[in-house]
Each structure stands twice: as C-alpha cells, then as structure tokens.
Image (cartoon, rainbow, N blue to C red; front, top):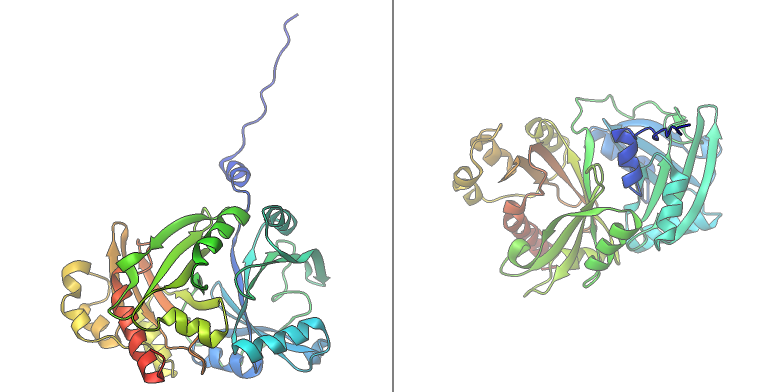
Length: 385
C-alpha cells in the first residue's frame, strides 16, 4: 500500500511577510507630547496647523491628574498631555520632564498587529521594558498596550487597536473641534527625527536593527551635512515596508556649535528633534500655515538661481518655490518638495517639516547645506552658534 504524503499548504504572501518580519508594524499610531499647558497647545495646533480635536481625557471624565487632547489630520495623530496636579509616579515624571526639557515629545507610539508578541520580541533582543503588555477596555472595545524605552527619556508605546473603535484609547471621550476645521494641511506622519549625543548614533541604529528588525535606509556622513562652521551625521532606520522611518542624528566636530549641539543643550539630552508631515499640496499648506502665524526658515534667493538646473521640472513652478521659500531635491526615484518651520516653542528644540513626495523616498540630501545654513542664521540670532 502506497502512503500518500500531503504537502502543507503554502503561506500566502501576507503570511510569508509576517513570518519573515520579527517585528511587523502597521504604522505610526501617535506622537505624544508632554507640555506645560495642553489646552493652549491643542488650540495652537488646531489654529496654526489646521488639526482637528477629536478626543479628550481629563478631570471632567475621571482623570484627575492629567489633561490630554488628541488632534488629528488625516492619519497623523498628536496627543498633548499636561499635569493638573501630580499624585502618582506618572504625574511626577511628566512634571519633571517639562521642567527639564520644556515642551517635547515623550512617546513615538507605533501601531502593531500584536502588542504582546512585539513587546516579547523587543525585550528578548535587549530592549528595556517600561510597561508590559496589558489590556484596557471600555464600551468601544479593547486595546493592548506595552511600552519600551529608546533614546533619552523617549519611549515607544506599542498599540494593538484592531478590537477597538473608540475615538482614541479607553478613558478618552470624543471631543468637538476647538475651531472649525479648514482644509487639511497634511495627511500623515512621514518620519520622526531623533537627536542623540556624540558617539551614540551607531548604538541606537544597532538598537533598532536588533530590537525591531528595522533596516538601514539612508546614511549621511562626512561632508553630506556640513557647512563652513558645523556638521552632523545621520542614519535612517525603517521597517521593511517603510511605514515607520526614524532618522537619527548626532553632532560632528565643527568650528562652531551645530544645530544638534544646540538641541542637546536646550532639551537637556537626547530626544525627538522634528516631525515630518506629508502633504499632497505643499503650496496650499505653506500659505495656510503662514497665514495662521507659523514661521518657516528662510532661504536666500541665490538658492533658486541654479535650482532648476539640477532639480529639473517640478509640479510647482520655480517662481512659486522661490516666493514661498520651499526647497526641492531630486534623486534616482523622483523628487520631493520640503520646508521646515522654526522651533514651535521658546526653547530651540522641536520643529516640523512639511514634505511633498513625487517618487523620491529620500530626505532632501541636496538641501542639507542650504538648510543647515538657514538654521545657523537662526542660531546666530539666538546667540547659540
């Protein structure tokens, strides 16, 4: 009698990808800020950035220690939390964080399909666990959360929300917009940039490689990001599908203090330097945000005199780029348009980038010198160059 062998069913492409990726991610879940006054921060990002308040958690609905406002623009989500009256270790941590660092990012939350598996893998690879996997639930369903530490006092909360349909997380209630929403200025978080101390960049690149299975996407060293006075080095890590991208910067030796040195001094250590926001119409975005009071870095007219020679034709005419001080860069895959705000708080720390991509998955390498010089001009005005 002949024995029949049944082959195991082959995995689907999606299943194969999950098996090959030790730390699958769905994308950025939220950028969480610790701030001195969350109500005022929420109003600023509503009016100046055109974001929409969608959820709230505070004393009015049972959270006595903190107040948190959740704002969205397309798939981009910001959470602003301030302390009402500290009574636990968490409240004291937030109070001390704002005192030491000013308003800044405390959490780059990542949505994952399985928070328990992601946390267990990360910790097994050497990550420091802050909060183990646990469920939170309300009438809208259940989320699974866990947190690991990264550079400085920043953390990554791992969010599994497939069984939840509430406005944000359990404990939050839906909230009406603070101001009537205008046309959306941006629709997603493109990347989040971290500044780390001299000599620490490769250490944190290795952390993401090992702990999250992220791969190295880009590298900028030596003269890539340098001017006559200052320089930095940068490497970009990302998940396999490029849904989550984290450039990591460290200062390089220069004649004067670099923007990274200035950030580390005023933030008080490593932390999130800027958040890049993806827009489909950077011209409309810049016009609307400028009108609402957002200040962008200036670029000399001389930058545009030769721009067309190496960037070529773009969706936006050169004259409009010059008028609005928008930068352009082209690589083998296409081009991008970008512009950077000035710091959005009194300390020269956190700022934002608006980016419109047309094929290019780069970060504006051709603009690094112009950008650095623009930042140096601002540093000099502040007396920090």
